[in-house]
Image (cartoon, rainbow, N blue to C red; front, top):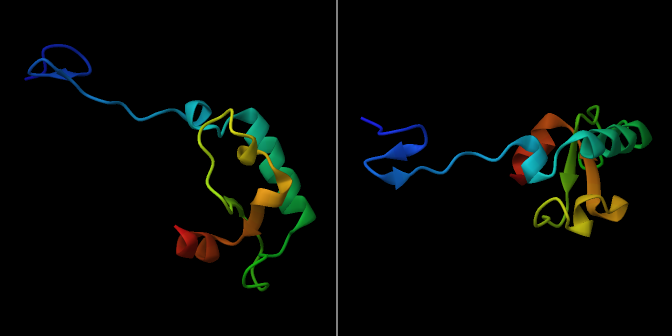
Length: 85
């Protein structure tokens, strides 16, 4: 039985980070929308509509400049995005 929220037998359990804590808040939503508007067709298969925006080089948290670097983004369809993860 947990002794309090977030603990189990005295050991603190980690919680998942929120979208904002991971760097996917309001600013990211705007950038993602703009990228998909500029590239409405998947940049990989060139057949399906782009519905996802992929970071070519992963970023290390919300303050990492790679998170919003336009040259580090790729508009992809769902299937191509799944294939990259």
